[in-house]
Image 1 (cartoon, helix red, strand yellow):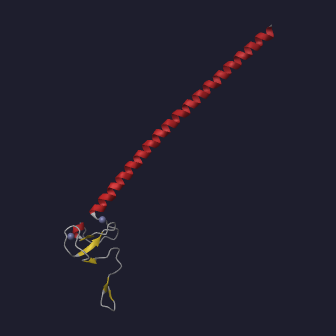
Image 2: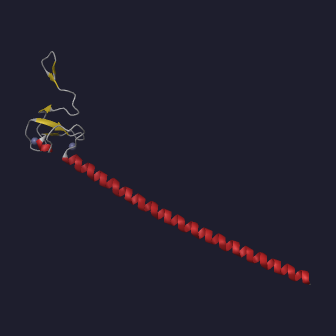
Image 3: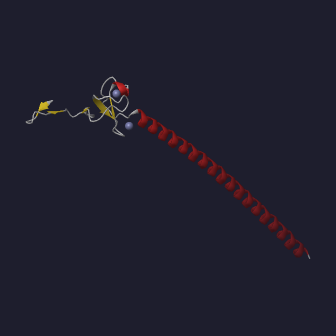
Length: 128
Ligand SMILES: [Zn+2]
Ligand SMILES: [Zn+2]
């Protein structure tokens, strides 16, 4: 802490600054020293935020934690849906490839049969 010329006290550069009663605590509606949610900036007493001391990383209020968690779950579900779709597409692709290979084999066999037939006919003609 250092005193400036006007006699005001500057806070140390905390990640979070205690704001002196800008409003009332969002939870208990009482004045005091607050920590602000890093998402919605609503003020909470440390004890109303279930914190024993200032967190040194970002802190989100209960509402924002819930929203974050729901978003996380939504994203996770969306990812699972995407994976399932990819698996379906891969299955379909494999099936088509197998079908294609089968058709090709059948086509080749047909051509070979026809060639054999032609050779037989040529031999028959030569014997005449
Ligand atoms: Zn409170
Ligand atoms: Zn919040």
